[in-house]
Each structure stands twice: as structure tokens, then as C-alpha cells.
Length: 521
Image (cartoon, rainbow, N blue to C red; front, top):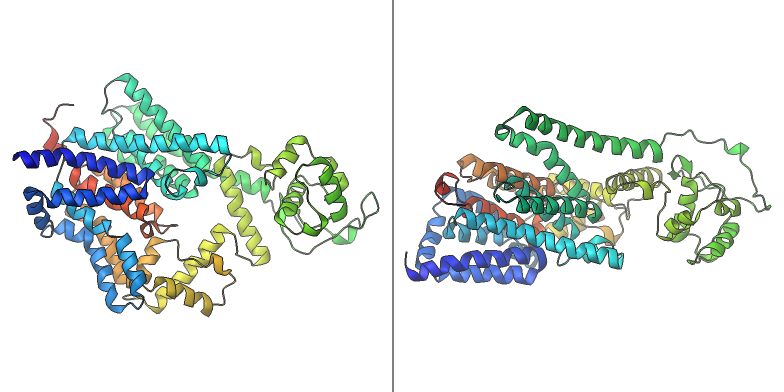
């Protein structure tokens, strides 16, 4: 091996390591490391030769086919500014594939150490974010270093998968204990991260992963655990859903309003509203004495409210919390609140069950409450799940109008804007976003043909049977596919690089087990 190429081979893992740091911590570092890697490859004769060979590889062509088709989509687009921006964001789907192909497999130890280096970066960021969370009391997505909490949840799930897959790579007991600690901590951090996408991905991994490793289980106990753990996980998920539904959203019959008391114990008239918003089966907007509620609340709380602000969020939180305890919204109801109740209300908690719920059940509560609120009011604004349903419905409407080749690479934003106007959407302008589903986004841009090409590019490694470590790769693709159901994963730099980097790494940098049998650990 030429001396220059040998030096370049030493530099490459370092640059990939920097890229992994950038993926976790810094978009600038992520971009700079990719440029640096391109320069290293172009400066080496051996790499340059393989770079040209990349475009003769059926697998490489299949992987980059969707990017090439998006480039072709320029021919029938009108908004070139948006199109070129989109192609720039998605460029790693082309560049990292051919660059990693040119670099070729590293030594097995080196490639696995790089994967664990990524795990350590995710762990470090999670640790920093956890400290920030408990010291600043900010919502986790505001304290994560360098990126979105939804994107980061995918990195956490992949890290857990890597730990499980390569758990026996390190032989020392201390190393294995440390890996268990990291995995447990990452699961804990995922819970406080409050990402429903992360919950679903992690639960899916726990449920389906044991079946991928089934052939590796040597004894009956391992196989029993492989069946029991997914079954318990699924049971917990179902129980959590039913528990929230039964306690917070029971099908109570409507009360007989003719028998309602009309005045409080102090003689003030109650207000009643026909809106059927409920907490724990009780109507929120009944038995309300605004003057008593405001005066009584201001006597016990440091967070004062005034009679002129009775329709704001803080006032509604008090109404909902009292309703959840089946208390009337008057001085008597306020007097029955405990110190803990007051603290929870001041923190914005609308239901007395919520402090006792784990993060998963809290998410289920929010989901069911949004559905109930929308059914009652018909207002989708500010309701995350309902808004996504509107986005998906709007996306399908656009696809039906341009089914074959789509609207073009750059016209997706304008198409959504026009469709919202055509449908007289109830969404306020601030909430009029795109599909939040990557499959639909691709179909809108380049049609059903483009979507089929996209799916072909994802599954092409299985078609060509060119996967060094099939179980790990299946786990990664599974995470990626799930993430695209309710997110536009490939519309951000971190999301695109997450896919392009690990997809290319697991296909071209990680060596075949057979090719690395003679390496010593």
C-alpha cells in the first residue's frame, strides 16, 4: 500500500468520528466534516479510482436513484429556489453513498469502535441535556445540545440497538456493566424526552428485535425471554392506553341540566356552557362562578389571575383540574384543593391524574384529549395529532391531483399553501405545515413513480444481497422507516445525514464478517 494512501486510511476514521460528533452536537461540524472527507477522497489516487467505479455498482445506482429522480423533478417544477435548497439538504444521499463506497470497508474493530463512539456521543449529549433539564426545568427539546428532540430520539434508539447488537464485542465485565448502564440511562432519557416517535420506535425494537436474533439463542431460557419480554412490553402498552381511556375518558351519560343548582353556596349564579369538553367524564364548562374562582384562587396562589383574563389558558387549566376532581368551579371547589393540587395547577397540569402517569400514559392522555376536543369543537389548531391528520388529508388531496410525477421537486410548499386555500382550512396560517410524512412528501414532489423509486432505493440492499451485517442493518432500516410515518425525516440536515451516513456506513464501511474472521479483537 502506498504511504500516502496508508496515511489517508488513518485520517478517514478520524473524519468519520468528527462527522458522528457533528451529527449529535453541531450542524456546522457535520457539514465541515463531510467537505473534509470529500477532499481526502479526491486527493488520493486509490480512492479516486474507486470513486469512478461507484457509478458502475448496481447497488450504488439503486441507492442514489431517488436523488437523481429528484434532480429530474426540476424539469416540471416552478419554484427552483425551493428545489435547489431541497436538493442541497438531500445531497448526502448522493455524496456519502459514493464517498463511502470509494473508501471501502475499514477493519472490523475500527468500524465497531466508531459505532460505539457514536453511542458515547449520544450518551454524553443525553447526560448534558438531563443535567440541563433538572437544573433549568426546561422542556427537554429546549435543552438538547444541537438539534430537535424528535431527531435526537432516533439517535437514542439507534444507540440502544448498537449496544444490544455488539454487547459481546467487549470481553471485560466492567465494559459490559458500563454498556448496560448507558442503555438504561438512554431509555430513561428517552422517557423524559417526551418524544412519541421515540416511544413507538423503542417499543417496536423491543417487540420485534428478539425475533431477528432467534437463531442466535442457544438455550430454552433465552427463547422464553425472547417471547416474554415483547409480550410484557405489548401488554404494558395496551394496559397504559386502556388505563388512561377508562379513567380520563369514560363514557359517562350527559347530566340532566334541569336538576342543576343555579347558585353557589354564597348565592352567586353559576354559568353553564353547552360545550361538551370533559375531564375524567365530567363537563368542564358547568358550575362556574368566575368571581368566586378568581378571588379564591388569588388567595392561595402566587400566580394571580384577574377577572378580565378568565378565558386565557391559565384560567382554563384551573377549570379542567377542578373538573377532573369532580369539584365545582367556585370558592368551595377551590377550598378543597391541596397544596400539591395548587402546585400542579401552577405548573400547567390540567388533570389530577397526570402527575401519577408515566410519560407514555401522559402522551396517550394528550392524544385522546385532542381527539375528544376536536370532535366537540371542530377546531384543529394547536392539536398536534389532529393537525397531522389534516396534513395527511391535504397531502393525499395533492397526490390525487398529481399522481404520476408529482408537482415537481420545488413546488411542495406552494402546493400545500394552495390546497389549504382551496379547502378553506380551519388551520390558522401558523399551523399550515406540510405532510409530516416522508412517504407522502416524496409522492407529492415526484409522484407515485418517485415513491416507488424511493422504496426501491431503501430495499435495494436486500434485493442485491449486499449487507455485511443483516440483523443490525434491518434494525437501522426499521427505525428509519418508522420515523418517516409521522415526520419529514429527510427534510432536515440532521435527518438526511442520519439516514445517509449510517446507511452508507453499514453497507460499505462495516466489513463482512467473513472478511474479518482473521482479525483479532
